[in-house]
Image (cartoon, rainbow, N blue to C red):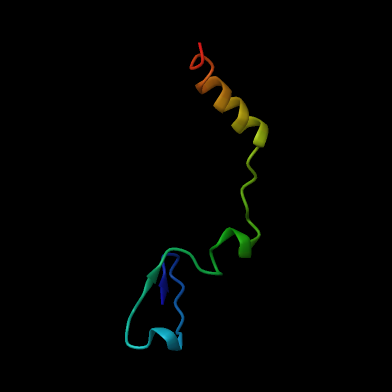
Length: 56
């Protein structure tokens, strides 16, 4: 298996095939601890601005 970050590893379940994956434990934010914090208040305000005149 080869990840888009360049990390590669072998598994027995994919013997004979080369699989390309987008995320692995080396680059996934959950495993690396580099998660991006999203402000829920900012998302709600963005939604309200977008649909402010929709109900009128």
